Amino acid sequence: MVSKYLEALITEFSKIPGMGQKSASRAAFYILKLKDSDVKRFASALIDIKEKIRECSVCGGISDADICSICSDPSRDSSLICVVEDEKDILTIEKTRIFRGVYHVLKGVISPLDGIGPDDLRINELYDKCKTGKVREIILATNPTLEGDATSLFLTHKLKEMNIRVMRISRGLPVGGELDFADTATIARSFDERIEVF
Amino acid sequence: MVSKYLEALITEFSKIPGMGQKSASRAAFYILKLKDSDVKRFASALIDIKEKIRECSVCGGISDADICSICSDPSRDSSLICVVEDEKDILTIEKTRIFRGVYHVLKGVISPLDGIGPDDLRINELYDKCKTGKVREIILATNPTLEGDATSLFLTHKLKEMNIRVMRISRGLPVGGELDFADTATIARSFDERIEVF
Image (tube, rainbow over all chains, first blue to last red):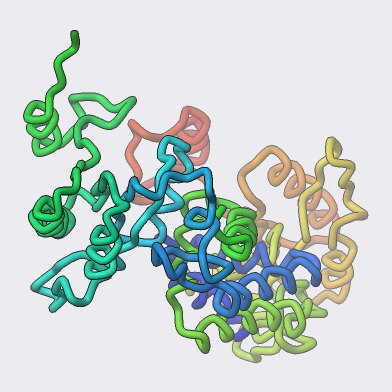
């Protein structure tokens, strides 16, 4: 290798999920051609994210303050809680601008094989919110995987006992997708969850 | 957005060529979950690349010292020069371990539409090397684009006058590729540059 510094940066980039050796090297050369001030800004952005981002004490999502901008927004409906696996999921759902309630991050899914049980997740925190009597509806938005589904099922039983309306986001063909390209499980699901047209 | 710091880092990542909004956001979340020390190492790698990498005074490639590890390697044949457009190309060719000569980086290609003429490139530096009488062969390895080809052609005329053997890397079907997927220009080129088998 002609430069150990270049090599070091390529190594850092190549650890990013989804970045192969080629894109990592392309990224390093992009950095090499940036202005000094731009590289410094990139480096500070990296440091800032670790030093300044906190966990929202209400939803468990990421936040710049003790309570995140969603949980502290009076225009959001706090009686409607969307349960997600991961902080990242909040951003994904927010992009659609379809949901006006608040979130609750589980920080994972129940996965016996990985030794992750209900007590390792933010499940009791969810129950505590429900016990206040201020929660009207829970929308489960865990990933449509075995573990995600199992976690949702686990939550449903307990939440139903608390007399809370529990909903789950729908599964089926992706918008713009084609039957031909969908897997059999998705097609089967879209038949199971069919909706009456008129 | 729930965090301006997260947003700032996503913005930095999304400027990297080939990184879309989604992969930038995935990268930022990856950083968020790293240990403090790992993020600091990443940030220093960014800063280092700008502060410590220099241009090799011989080939124009990247280097940690005044003369790069290739140009200063006595086992490399300095009478055989491979001419490339970009510093990055050196790394790409080095990976093949096929070339044991040295390099010369042009730092671009002749492109009248972008206002780049021969004097804006490291062409005179190449002529100077050839004038020493120590250069036996030049291998042109510019990209197979209109500008790359034009630049190679431009160099060929002058180098021939200097009585230097000028070669060009071959074009044709990529190894492992299929005729069916190749574009017509590549197929036409592979017929033009056909090689006798026996």
